[in-house]
Every structure is written in structure tokens, then in C-alpha cells.
Length: 192
Image (tube, rainbow, N blue to C red):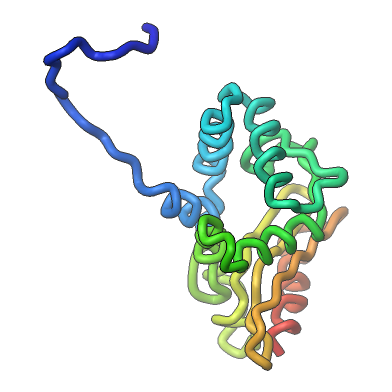
């Protein structure tokens, strides 16, 4: 098979439409869907003239983040899901991206915020935070978990009403069950 155009006078046999890009971004973030994240990285590659591969996606994602003037020193995007141990990023990059997504000058990034799970209510934060945690309902964050590595990055509404962006990255953690409550307490402290 090769790309081509239909003959003049051809009629469509079927039509399939994807969910809007914003909905896919939200679903990937809320549910930590690695398959969608990989597909989004490949689509970013195609949309920017790169090949739909790990390397093409890395080049494309890096270029797009650079256009947003985000701090990319030391960053590496070996895959779109963050599962590759060669992936590297900083807390500064994550918080800058979240702040840029909240900037009215970048409405195209709003799904980055609206897709974040809500502490105690949705997605990967549904079972985290309790009824008595000051972060419940106020913390919205994306989780990150690999063996020995745990992260929580998102936003929280401060007592004075300001929206704060945060990123907590922990390495050499003994287990997710030990690290996650500590990260949750850090984010909840910002809410109180």
C-alpha cells in the first residue's frame, strides 16, 4: 500500500472520526494512559514533519516545548509515555509547562490542566487523599511511577485563591506505597 488520492467521482464507503485532540490529552493525563501518550507523541512528530518514531517524536516534542520557551536543559524524551529509563526532565520544566498551560495566551494548552486527576475524586488520584486531607478536591496532579522513581506534578488552589503549580520528583524510593503518601502530603501542604 502507498498513500494516494481517490479517483474523481469516488464515494466514501465509511468514515471514522477520532475524539478531539483535547479529549485525548485529557484522557491520557487523567488515566495515565501510556498508549494514548505514545500516540500523541507520534502525532506531534507527523504534524511537525518528523517521522512517526521514538526519535521523530523526541525531536518534535523537544521543538514544541522550545517554542513555548520552557527550560529544557538536561531534558530527554526517549518515548511519549515516560516509561523509558532514558527519559529525563526537571521539576522546573514540569512547573513551567503547567504555568504556561494556565497562561491565557496559550488556550491550546488548557487540556493539560483540565486533564489532571482531582485528588480523592478522579483518575489516578481517585484512591489517594482522604476525606480529611486538605488537598482533597483542591490538588490536581499527574502521577508518575517507575520502580524506584515517583513523581507528582500539578496544580493546587492556595488558601488565598492563587493557583500554584508544583512538581515533586523522588528517586531511589523503596516502593510506590511508601513514596506516594509523602508526595500527597507535600501537595496537600500547599493547599493549606
